[in-house]
Length: 165
Image (tube, rainbow, N blue to C red; front, side, top):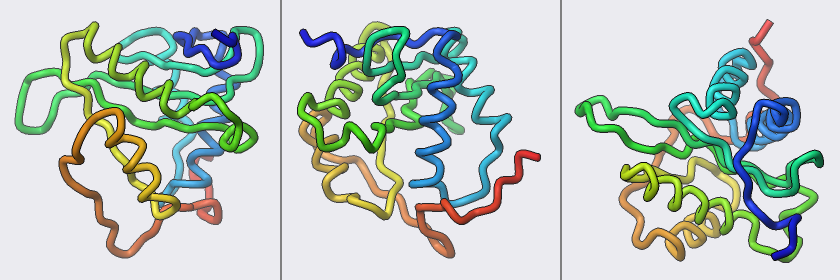
């Protein structure tokens, strides 16, 4: 397999690249103000495999082309653990490139859920190319199990002020 298309487990050494991707993703899909400290804490925990894991596309030592942030959570109504995808993001420079980067990250997520013996909760919260994203997930995961709605907001919060201080 082409080394640039391999999904690898992120490590603490990837924190700066992942933060760069996360802030790009927030600019495209955020609908409320970003808290960079909270973003960093979630990423740091996953990179250290503390209640989560981060999958990255691309060889170590080079900028990541895409990432998936997975965290172990418990739903509000249960004590059972679930693996929740908090973000999948492909750098804009690689979206049109061959190789199926988003598909590879979804497959990484499924494998992580299987290995942990947990259900995977994964979804689309976006006003941009929503149908294409849903179709990608349906190809890998089966029929959708719901939908998100936003009232008084839309995704793509690049113009939102940053409140991280």
